[in-house]
Image 1 (cartoon, rainbow, N blue to C red):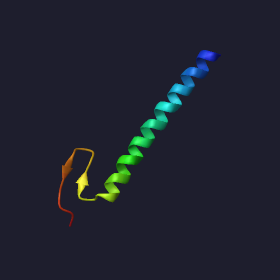
Image 2: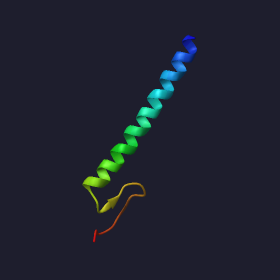
Image 3: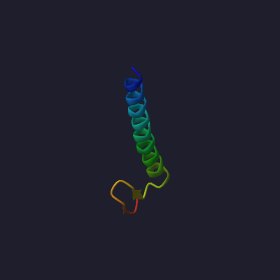
Length: 46
C-alpha cells in the first residue's frame, strides 16, 4: 500500500508541475503577445 501511495504522489506532482509550466507559458504569451514562446519565434502584432 505504501508503494502505491508513493507512486500516486509522484504522478500527482508531475501532473501539477506540467500544468504549472503550461499555464505559466500561456500567461507569459498573454503578457508578451508579440512572442510565441512555444517555438521561440517573435513577430510583430497587428
